[in-house]
Structures are given as C-alpha cells and as structure tokens.
Amino acid sequence: MKRVSSHVSIASEAEINLDLSRLLIDKPRLTLERKRSFDEQSWSELSHRQNDGFDSIMHSPAFPSGFDSPFSLGTLGDPHPLVNEAWEALRKSVVYFRGQPVGTIAAVDHASEEVLNYDQVFVRDFFPSALAFLMNNETDIVKNFLLKTLHLQSSEKMVDRFKLGAGAMPASFKVDRNRNRNTETLVADFGESAIGRVAPVDSGFWWIILLRAYTSIRQILVWQNHQSGIYGYPIEIQALFYMALRCALQMLKPDGEGKDFIEKIGQRLHALTYHMRNYFWLDFPHLNNIYRYKTEEYSHTAVNKFNVIPDSIPDWVFDFMPCRGGYFLGNVSPAMMDFRWFALGNCIAIISSLATPEQSVAIMDLIEERWEELVGEMPLKICYPAIENHEWRIITGCDPKNTRWSYHNGGSWPVLLWLLTAACIKTGRPQMAKRAIELAESRLLKDGWPEYYDGKLGRFIGKQARKFQTWSIAGYLVARMMLEDPSTLMMISMEEDRPVKPTMRRSASWNA
Image (cartoon, rainbow, N blue to C red; front, side):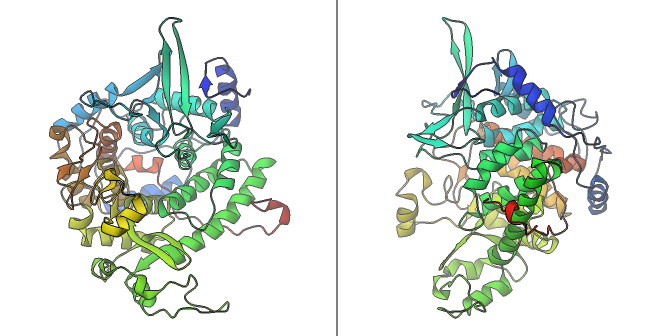
C-alpha cells in the first residue's frame, strides 16, 4: 500500500480493498433472533448466546432481515412520527464520493452563517450514524467509510511541522470537488485545521470499535500504544481505549505478529482494568474513605496512594453522592482528582464491561437517583456539574462557548441518548431508556435537532448550537431501534471477560 498525502484520490482503491479482504478474520456468522419486546431475561439470554463473537460487517449485513421499514413496532407501541422525520434528515446528511456514500456531515444547518468544519465527515460523529444504518441493514455506507478512512490513515500526516505516527486516524475528511477538472478528492484533517490544533486521539478508538475486525489494525494499535497509557488520561479516553483493545483482542489472529499483539494487549488490559476499577471508582464508602485520608504517607503500604488532600473534595460531591450508587471519576492524578461525572465515559464503561456488573448497576442507580441533575428536560448531561467563576477561567481559558451549563461545560447533548439507552438495556432497565427517549421526542423535531442544550435542566437550545445536527438525529434513531430490538445491542456490547493474565516475557512488553 503506497503512502500518499492528505489529499487522497481513488488510485489505490483496489489495494485498499485487497488489504482489507486479506486482513478480515473468518468468523462464524452471528445469528440474532429478532426480539419484539424486552425484559431482563431476554437480554441475559442474548448475551450468553452471543459468546462475544461478531461477524464482519464488511461483506454482508450484520443482522438478519426484519427492518422492512425504517422502524418496526415494539415496546414503544406505534412508530413515533419523529422516526420518519429523523430518517429523512439523516439521509440528507449523507456525503457522496464518486457516486458512493462515504459518511454523513456533522450538521445540515442552512440557517447558520458560519459553516466552519460542520460540513465534514467526522470519525467520532459518524459512529451513531453508522449504527443506525447497520441496524437498518444498510451496510454500504459503513463499508465505504471504513475503506476511505483506512486509506487516509496511511497517508503522511503533519501538524505544525510535527509528524504523526503511522496508524493515526483523521479527525474528519471532506470531498473537494474541482468543477473545472471534473474531479473529486478526499481531503483529511488530522488536527492541522482544528480549533486549537488538537490531534484526534479518540478517532482510532471509534474506528476499531466500529469495525470490530482485523484490518490494518496493527498500525493503528502501534500508534495508540505510543499515544495512550494508563495514567493521566480522562475517563472518556480510558474507557474508549479499553473497549478498542477488547475489540482488537477478539479480532486478532493468534499467530505471528498477531500473537505478539495479543500478549501486549493482555498486559495493557490487565493493568488498565485494575487501575480503573480501583482508583477511578467512587461510591459512598469510597468517598467516606477519601474524606478520612491521611496525607504525606510514605511506603508501599500507603492507603492514600495519590496523596489526595481531603480538603480538595468539592462540596457538591457530598450532596451529589447517594447512599446507593457510584460512578467513575473524570480523572485521577497525583494530589488531584476530577470528581465530575462524565456521561460518555461511564456509559462506555458499562457497554464494554470495564465496569464490573456491580459497578454497572451502581452507575445506573446514580442516574436514577439524580435524574433531574443528569437528565433534566433533555437527555443527557455531558458532565456534571458545570465549572464556573475562577475555576472556569483557569480551566477553559475564559472560553465563551464553555460558560456554565453550556456546550462541553455541563451542556445537554441529545447524541448521548443512544449510549444511555444501551446502558439501560444492558443493565435491565428499559423503562429508564423509554422515559429518556420520550423526553427527547417532545422537543427534538420542533427545536430543529440541535447539537446541544443549555441550562441546569437542559431547557434552552444551546446559544451556539447548530441545528439539524446529524449525530443528534442518528443518536435518537439508534436509541429507538435498540429499545425496540435489544438484539441490536449485541453489535456493540461486550460481556465481562475472564481476567487476562499478562505474559511476563520481556520481548512482549508493550513498550518494547
């Protein structure tokens, strides 16, 4: 496969397809029995039957036929009028490259004066769109997206004269059309045009999770190896990293180089699982223990291993933490803990089984106990609580978009509805998901499918929110379809695995 610039033509498409075909693992087809209703037992039976095995989505539909229309009947009764509107809006966002669908743009907001990069196909944003299309037996767009991004990641990548390693996935791409020459070219953005010039660390994780197959995975894993570790990363990156590693572990062939990667992944998962379940977890007993910590402990028997100062615990945590419930902290580092609750990281922890079954139940207990704070009038808070005043000035740099209870600072994001629904179904709480979906349905269409909502309860359309945001539309559709047919959850959910014992062979070290 030849190396190309970020401006990619179709010249080596045959090479990409051949490379993809060679690297796919021949797995037995996953047969899903379509469910028309849901109860706690049905998901338990499904999860045992799946045995964590997934067929490739590349050459055939991932699920048996059954979606004769964009949506079927089931636990929510008759199809909501919003469903057809959502599918129509989602299809309007589809991007075509040389006649083939390759993704969905971030937003189709014709009323906005500034397009910025909302007219591009983002790897992260496309994920819920991909799930919606796969659940509707429309696989071509997903296949084309994976092929094109696989091609783009093989190009040489420069960000402000810094060269990104092989395997780095682009944050986004767009189709550049030259009317005079009648040509189309894919143009990738690896962070060189992004606000703040931020490299897309999470793109590779989303790509592996979407693919869940062995295709050019070696380069991507090598890059993620050098970019991601155990310590210092926030819960979202840790949880995505864990899930991507587990997806890769399922798909790697246990021979040759694949065997070496399996050993390296086993070591990383062993350390990551221990670290997250022990040091990132917070519930009432843990909070009480931290409150009573002694500081400046020295020796391997220290209880306060990160030397957290009890007085640094924010006052809001004591009121927020119920006696029944818990969650993974935002981040943990020496002498400092980010006690905020983050939706994506905690939901992914449940879906990927980074959280133990007991921890998964506790996370859902917390959401139920703090429904008004975390769900309010529009699911779901991206984080809680918002930071403000001096802390806001220091952490955000006085970012006017991230004022309290707005955007990434406590805003409410409809796209998170599919993650909440997946977590509800996996933990046997479909009524929670139904309640959240009906709440979203009361607002989304009449509000124009906003990107996010503002305010403590998520009552107001975000002050800079784009309308007809594609992943808000797709997130709703995926949530609806998962609740109607819980077998679709098997596409992304992972059951708790047996502990992976690391091989203590020196040559198999992850950083070797």
